[in-house]
Figure 1 (cartoon, rainbow, N blue to C red):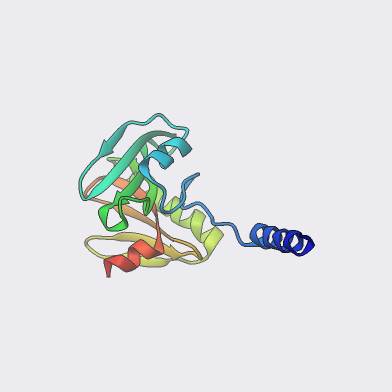
Figure 2 (figure 1 turned 90 degrees about the horizontal axis):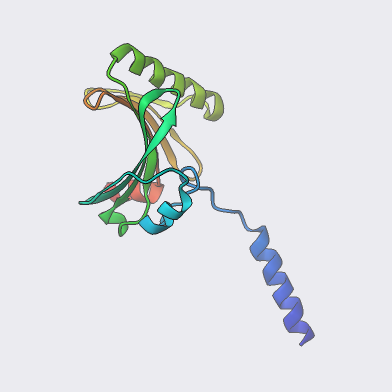
Length: 160
């Protein structure tokens, strides 16, 4: 009985000292279901797109844009579990969009160090490989938006 109690105590100590998983975005963790993400979010739910990627969209009050949203993406390749999440700031003015992309890039460069610059016809922005996820900020010219998304590494590996 005493050995069992000691073993149980050691198991509890080991479990409590193991590193805690960091959220992917806001209060949501990689692998959460749509229902779990809805329960974790404090914003009013707006839409759910359904297709190869299920998408939860929430309007977001932001000083950066009058039309900002929080997005959670649940790809079928990930068994419709959370793999990508972030903000989209819709801004029609090219200069204002560029200023916001530059501001966010500088903000995260100050936190995470110099990001990797990408500048081609499809992608203009920066990315950071963080310990538990990738962060990408880009100026999406076609959508007239600045996008800031966090990607689960396991999902990224499934794409290649």
